[in-house]
Amino acid sequence: MRQRTISDFFWRDPDISDLSQEDKATLLYFLTSPSSNIIGCYQVVWMIAAAEMGWTKDQLLVVVRRLKAKELMEFNDIGWVWVKIWWKHNSPGVALNPNSKLISHAKKQCAAIPTEWLIEFGKSLEAVGINTVAMGYPYPIHGALDAPSHAPLDAAPDAPSGNTQTHQQKGSDAPSHAPRDGGGDGSGGNGYLVSGNTTTTNSSSPEAKPVVVPDLIFPTNTPQDERDAIQAALVSSRVNESHWQALLDELTGARLHRTIDNPVGYLRGMAERALNGTFIPERGIVVAQQRAAREKQAKHDDEMNRALKDKQLPTEEAMKHLPARTREFLSKQMMEGHAK
Image (cartoon, rainbow, N blue to C red; front, side, top):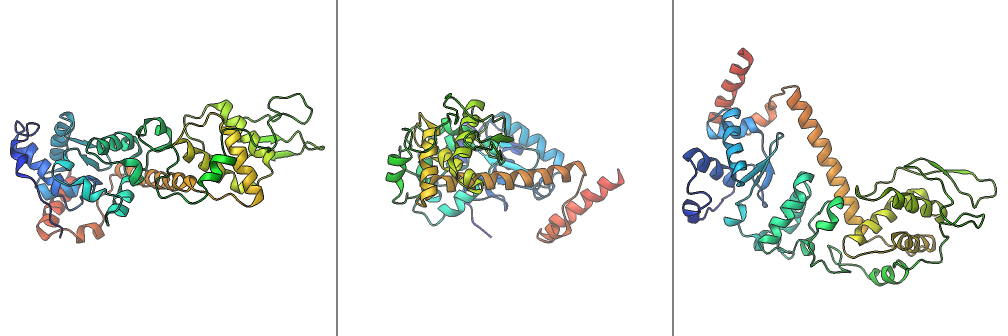
């Protein structure tokens, strides 16, 4: 069992002092819940949480909604809770220090946060003095413009390798010596008819063989014309299609840390290095990891939603880990539910 320490300021906190006894007890529960974690944003099973409070699920959710209205908590239907007063009673400097032994666990927990909360949660960490860039906070790609302004221009979330200078020189905004967007007929412009993730034609080929563009994952705010230009540049780059997403992720990661006025030129420079065997992914690794975490979370959320729709109850395995009194209470609730 872990030990949680609550400051005695809790009882005189202006945000809390006017709350009802039920509201205060619920806040204390979520500050000390057996399901809680380092960052105060975690997932519970509503029926189990309610049983530990001695309530029904519906009774607990009534109180949780009141706490959300007062901006003391956030929650969703599948059991995620964010205790917004967490850092009043826990030390962010200890849990989220890049040199802390806890930082790897904290980063994993941050990566699991529901995507729609990531930007606001990151801002809440900034408000208590945490440098989210230094700790490697997983800002969502579509929220890159909302990342803190103190992000260093050329600093990756983790220590960069010696390839950073190469990125600036050969992957810079200036176009490289790689093939241009212009068609082989010298007419200029985009020589590829790219529409989404479809089949396009490499007009520089004498036989104009079709090239299948793989399903590339772009940041959601990428304009369609930029997507088309990037896909066309990849088609003309002669880089194997299996590496295209890695190049795109590297471009995406770089744009989280600096302004790139010519993303297509930047990508061409990386493609040229890939052909020469000198391309080493850096910032794109974090982008790919964050995407994998979001996909895993989305899969989990989907499974939880299906379980809720099917009115599935907590499994026997989960019940085994509860105290006997809680198991008895919860079993009674389940039997009453079946009777209805």
